[in-house]
Image (cartoon, rainbow, N blue to C red):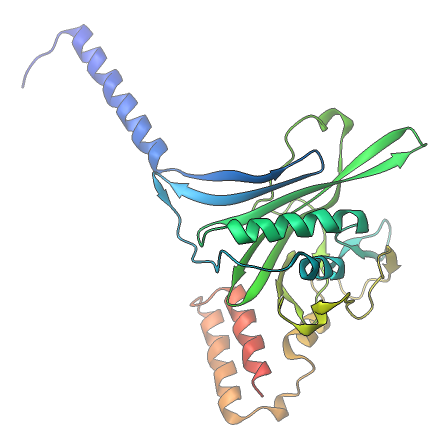
Length: 287
């Protein structure tokens, strides 16, 4: 073994450390954003995950063309529910009317420019005047992508108040696997439940040719109602969404067998919850 002077050994160790650091940094997964729109009230980015020098393959159905008006009709129909002070919950639109036009325009542009390995990140600001002089800002943010002919919206902030001391800081990014607010989406055909804060939307449905409201809609206003269940998504509502009111006795033997197999796949972890919900809905639609 070659014996090196102490100074040479120190330099050698330093070089090895630097090389290992570069190697580890290159292997880490990082989020890369490319701005499509950046204004004082809205930011729209194309988002991709990069590991080392390789982009994570997502295989989304991008680029995708959806008209701005259809997207506006979709956004206007989305509502969420949040716990109310004391008891009950507040149901409200996810997007204030003054936000919908620019949000729909930005989302349409980004979906048309996105690659299959990118998702769309949207952050939009609502300003509320106070005392005719001061104003308060609220942030709504979400991720969007297209898969299996459906539009997915992952809401992360809805009317989130921005502190005055943080107004000049970068707006928080919507993160796919991080939920920072306590709310849940309201679902119903053709706006399907895909997670507590996630929606799978049949964007090609004829109902979105014009303005559309889900049953029990607030019609653009906040509304309080009593708690139906303490679970994040009331089971009776979820079953109604998934089954469309289907009685199991109306299903064929092949459908019942397919449902049983699907339940086994979910229980054994062979498919994700999202895939389970989507395939179950598709199976029930085929009757």
